[in-house]
Image (tube, rainbow over all chains, first blue to last red; front, side, top):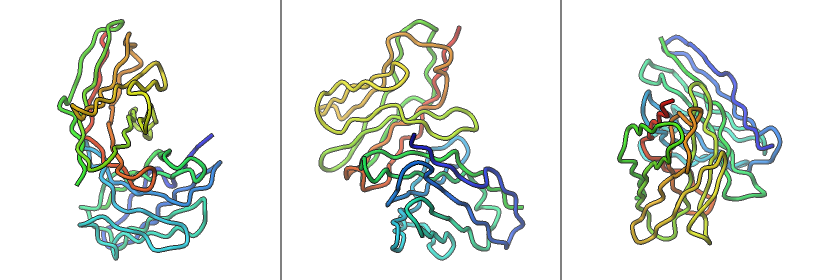
Length: 116
Length: 114
């Protein structure tokens, strides 16, 4: 149980285009999902907290107009990188908090974004 | 602001020997502490957590961690290392029980030598 999926696993896009990444909790409901960014050989940095049915909360320094987050259901959150640039190339990882077990976070496998 | 320090970039241990991966934290209030492991090209896997209760926490794959409030530490340990334990290990802290995203340490590469 407690599986989180992400789609796509890898994406390459041209500079200036937008990319949508999906995060799904497959066997549990997640009122809260989190989006992280991991640079090569570095730690994960929290970007934003996504709550079902409400606006996301962004960490300081994260552009909310660039990284659009939508949490439309208890099992799906999406991150859209708008007008992507090469510096947005990174590994994006989501996690989902099990609504029944409040302190458990389960991580997706991540999405490798490359902007050319 | 909360923070996590993992002072070692890499830890090398011979197979069969005990291993320790160090972690110290800084957070106001009670900490909620976690260890995760990341294998190449795979997502983070949960190992164990400290929320409250016994200071020695047992987790997956034979790992355990000891919460030490006075030293603000949460070191990961295993009595006998396996080659398959080689991976990247992250310590993380949350300020509010389940309500906040995690603050991660920089990670420690654990290399178990046959």
